[in-house]
Image (cartoon, rainbow, N blue to C red; front, top):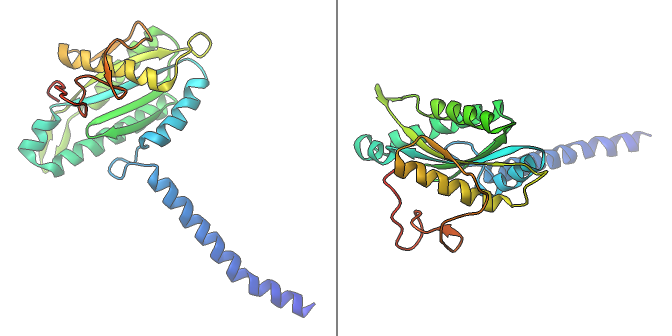
Length: 217
């Protein structure tokens, strides 16, 4: 019996070591799934969670691009720009929690989200709340920095619609760009079919495409 107890006791440090290793591994995996500046999901992790949200009921997909961000970076420096991005991430996280959604930082000052909506009227109210949250001033070194956003959205009902997340993001991106060009806070799509020509799956004119001429952020 004493030998068994000794063997069990000797195994405790090993078990504890494996548990600590597993915990560290999980933390590294989770960190790789999140943007280091905002804590928001990266694109791949967002795709997994957003697909589940869409399958669960009536939802909307959003693409959000900040306005006046380049001017903030140029006038106040990249640290101020990072503060604006981080603040936007916190605001989007709070908004998503209220609306049973998930949010990602796609890169730069661009974000994507999927959240529950019950109707077109609910979508309009949700977009107004989202715009109001993002457009609150961000205070950096005593300066109140004003930032806006152009938002594109598209509603989705799994009971009647048969398109994937990638298509919905393209449609929302087109609406975001139209909003930015027109000066509107947000626009919603009336059709689930993308209208713009694409290069390697990205809207022509979008930042990152060859010859892109995206509207001034």
